[in-house]
Image (cartoon, rainbow, N blue to C red; front, side, top):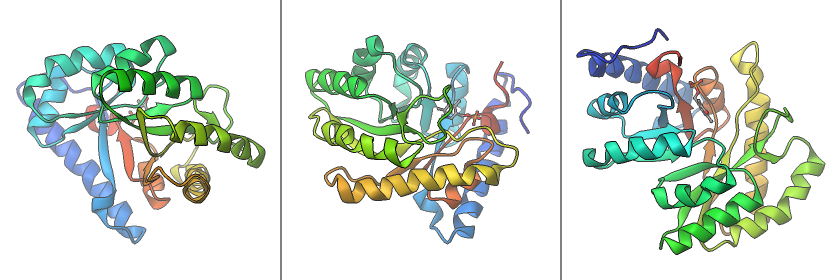
Length: 248
Ligand SMILES: *Cc1c(COP(=O)(O)O)cnc(C)c1O
């Protein structure tokens, strides 16, 4: 399932098979949860893979792609601009000094707003560029030190987040659409469900306490746990290895 694909003539056909398998698993997970499969979208994560692979995936109908580094995303976006309507999502941590580049790049969605400072910088640069940047707030639900995101692992942290979220929601250059998280690596996919459940509960609370943003999106679930995330309400899953194979 996850062997490395070689850039060769059969690439698009092989990607088509893998994409179809992932989409089918997504649909099954949605139906099992009593949800309409159309409410869950697939972000194909292309980090470390060449632009040619993105083009091949686009050829077989995948148009939404995720990258985790601004400096890797920009050249791919430039090379593939001719393909027409690809939707690029930034899913990784954005360093402050890259905020301006990120806001000007035209990402359809930034999943990884993880500090007030970054939110302010993105907003400022987006306003300058004459746009409003759709964005999600990344939350650290597990408390792992290695994870980025707003501290949201316990009730006190989640309460402390409210005034910050209010300030971010008021920024003129950002359009907040929901939350994103990464679950910890766990032994069984279902062990990730409590983290997804907590993100959803936090989102439900923000809907009430910080009205204004629409809060519709929950970006959660990757290759190892996207079905568990869909069971808990994911609207966006970010899948790399199940489509493109292991990364070098
Ligand atoms: C790499 C990455 C993914 C995809 O991970 P896979 O395990 O390859 O599916 C999802 N989200 C983020 C933030 C990533 O950096």
